[in-house]
Length: 132
Image (tube, rainbow, N blue to C red; front, side, top):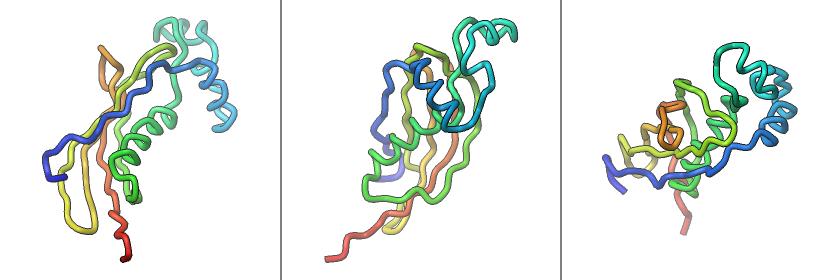
């Protein structure tokens, strides 16, 4: 790996409204935009429920763990830019922006496939060294 290299992408093929109900329970988030298409429509946000932000960030974290399997994420800075809706497919990716023996930094993005970015940000990963 070197500065400028892309990170391996992580794709989630179908955002499930059933999973959104589970996330609502875990997060104690009863916001109706995650559970009721009529509530989403009443707000003028379309006709499909909207995924929770922490669930979207989890796709990025999966991508980072795949890219740095023995690393530890030590910092995340995230901007939420758009919505991910039920039945969307999303892809997370990133680029290495700095790298040394102890730490990597990268920019990342989660994008709806054939759509807009849902979030973007930066991450710092401690590169845990194997003891021989």
